[in-house]
Length: 353
Image (cartoon, rainbow, N blue to C red; front, side, top):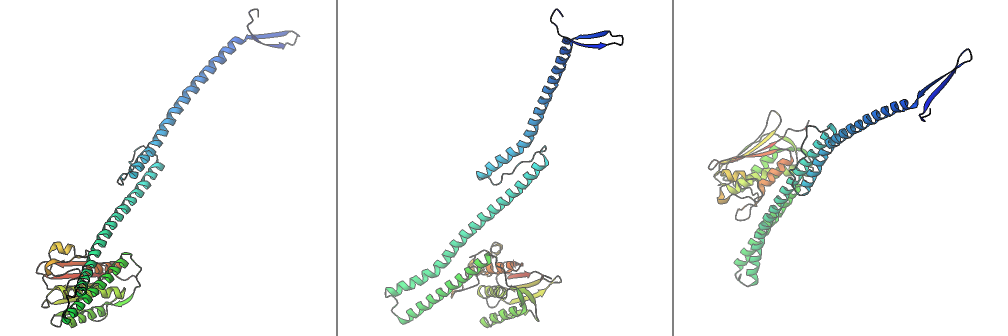
């Protein structure tokens, strides 16, 4: 039109040849399109804002557990092995599974670390005790050699006695080294060469040895017939020998000894070695399996299995008993009281079918 306003037009020819023109201002169309465009933009913007908010919420929900994991890892790196990843009620299932798995791993790491520290402490104490025990016979041998070098052993009888004492100390040191090697081997938990062993025969042999060494001691044995177990014969023989040696060394000859061997209904084998000696105090009984532990005052039941000429044990005998029995899957228990003697019970498990 004259105002320059755009129109949209269309023409149609009628049947009589006339032409009809239809026109509509384009301004109205443009206004409608603009309103529609503004509505679309408004809804689109609102939708984008909602999506952004939901994304941030979802990301926060996912990242919070990850931040907890990072904080826990940093605390553990600084030495706090007790730290664990906390749980959250809004955590997604996969993240919660990861948290549980990591906490389980951290628990195992802490347990392994504690075990390693305990083993290291025991090793340090064991090395210190072993060094002290080995130093004692070496000092005695060195002392006699110095006396000889200075010419202070003039009499033949003195030299003979000195040689006998040095031999005794050397033997004692050799037995101590053998027992240390035995414990070191058992600590490695070697695979035992199991075979049928007649425990009754081992008990009777050990009892005969005790009677030969102390003919005046009463030794009663209830181990007739055959009692077969699957075990290492050398180790089981050492167990019985150590128990009876303790009695021989640390109880008076007048104290009777009883050795009972029986099999329970479920197939367990129980060996009970008891004496009627002076017994032990409760505090000493609690430490009877400690390495290098000795009962002071000769109250009996010392954990040493080997002795020198003075009858002092190495303090390793009962430790070896416990280690050998444990390697067979069994256990050792002790019953004692001052004046009531000492009874040690060894229980070996049922044989595998």
